[in-house]
Length: 484
Image (tube, rainbow, N blue to C red; front, side, top):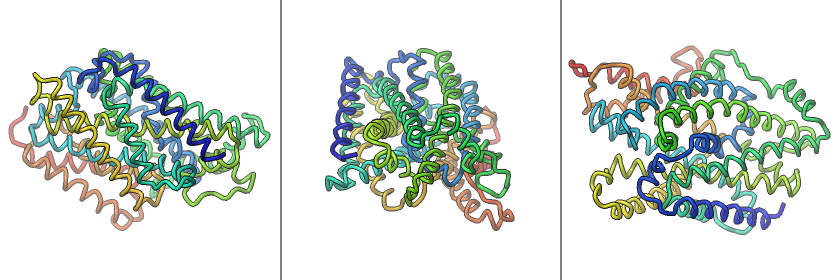
């Protein structure tokens, strides 16, 4: 497939996104940007959040990851369902009861200013790096298969992508993203299902026979019982539960969409629907991953050194023009969904939690909008910088890096919210920033030396739980003698 055709497809899809942005951002104000004026239909939010939850990581990295870990990721997905139930029954009611725009305002109400700022900073770090991970994965694929052919440097590709995302989210914010996510989810799902059909046609097998081939291969292994393995199913299940709680329930990006729903009932419907839909959707991506490796073996295609590239390599070079066009649309959808809501939530959190612009300019909406625009642009520049930095150090599947990093940055948030929700103790607010710094450091050393400390036991994604527990214990030890 020619780079020119790929580029043309990218341009056309981008124009469609800007048309949606123009339609949805008319008459948009600050409340439209932050919470969509609380008018977002829950079913639209639920459907759009599929794409936001999947992003480029699921689209590219999970199929590639199957070669190393089989279907073990599916155990994490099952843990997601429990995590979403906890968010729906515990966190969402609390957010709506307090009428929050930024979910980290809860930490101010429960503990004080230091906790509030600490939670906000950890979210900003988590989301900036997380969004950069996702963007890097997708943009690096486009760079290898498209822009390198035109002699365009990687930094230019990244800058153009972020500039486009910054432009179509600048005015409408979450109000626009609710609808662009819907489009992006649709094209991502079309891309993966179409690829599955085309592969079966190339291999001249029916879908039933392909399912049987995948099931009978080593790639379909779901349950790993070795307790010392990072892919042990018990570890993965509970990691999935807590990953969902922190990366959705304690994440301004994901919760901002839920808070844009009309009421708590609609938000809970959204969360429940999303959790159930993600099971078959993730299974389809894992199935595609196994098919890609079986296809490579069948036609003696060398597996790329970076397994994240197996999907684009086969789609662009072996499946024909139609498959290539479908893939590029899905890929660009993944690129945009990886960063647009992240950019909006970063702008929201930094504007409201760090700068407190809503309080400073409560009676001057125009000035608030102007300041918000500046923050929006600054966040775009920061993400560009982190993506370029990440390119220098990337050496493993992005999905693994993403969850590992989340263990360090979301752990303190998990500990803070758990302490606030499940105890009545009053924390020592001034010591909270110290605890939030010490906990990830201790977690790092425990993880690094786990095989020595625990007789060969390897710490995987449960690092998040360990980090949260250390934070919780630190808060308990330093608590004040009085209770709330």
